[in-house]
Length: 218
Length: 217
Image 1 (cartoon, rainbow over the protein chains, first blue to last red):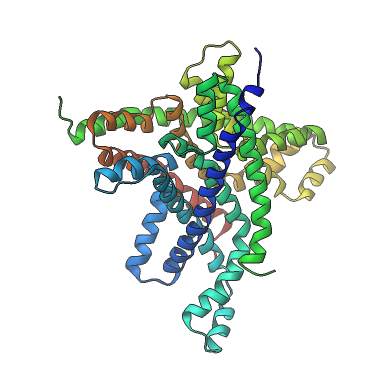
Image 2 (cartoon, each protein chain N blue to C red):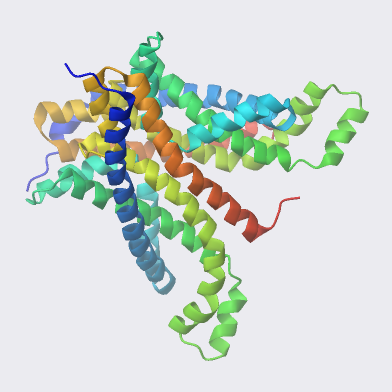
């Protein structure tokens, strides 16, 4: 048995493009998924009954099915219903919906831990309901749950490796392409796996640094 | 060409569901055994082994399960052993599960106050006796809800075995969808079957969680 990593590393451009796709998809999914999660968490805490039920069903459906099936349903299933999507758009939608469902539960836990007195104090200062939610309840809630949120974002990033199965040219797609050219399958996947490991460590650091600066103040 | 009724689709998917369940159980039981061994090693061992196991956990938690499956599939073959998709999937999922379970259980053991260990050794109990009579009964109570919850992750993880060609529910779904040209119905059914499998387990985990920690205020 002889391992030849050089044969894989000469294709570093392919791997680089793959990394950019993986990071890009993750970045968009993070932003949109969190917006969706915040909206759904609000709906579950304060919305009318039917909306709570709808959001609850959405969250449970996503959390209890594999990401790959969600992706296949969106990419292969929806065109049959008349919605045609490119692989990239389908992946994007699947990742946003997936992260959104988990984010809903995570953020809701943070919102529920808000002391009642803070809401009452804010209302007594004549803030509107929306202002109370966005300025008083949400920031400390995000702060409380940020570590869980970061973990979930990384899980979504690692899960996005599956998007290569519908030919999105992400990191795992690059590894597959390289191994199909030089038959160095083991080496190609070792390299890709290590790159994923580095990405997940760096993303965790970045998000831990970004969180306090962007979402909830230091 | 044959016409496929919805019942044909469902029947074939249900047949494939067996393999999803079987693979989940193998990974869960195998992962539990390996995870418990790693936990024991971590409790007993010096800092070096402790770091090695921490690295093992980080490796499996910080890389995609899909890559782990590919590595198992191509890696074992590289050693000169003919490997089926079934073996590779069971192997990779077992290691993956063991990494998560050992980390969950370590948290539960370290949640037991240190004084309990000390009380055990002041009664002249050996390490094994302390573990068996003092620590594990308390740690197990804490460990059951998250362990049941993780079973859901394992079931969902088995869907990735389809990518290396193991015919379980997801792979069967792709094949049937290619044969019937009804991807919407087929993948809809596949999703609902996973849901039917996972949702009760999720509910059970949540119920156990509430019972262990009491109702939240």
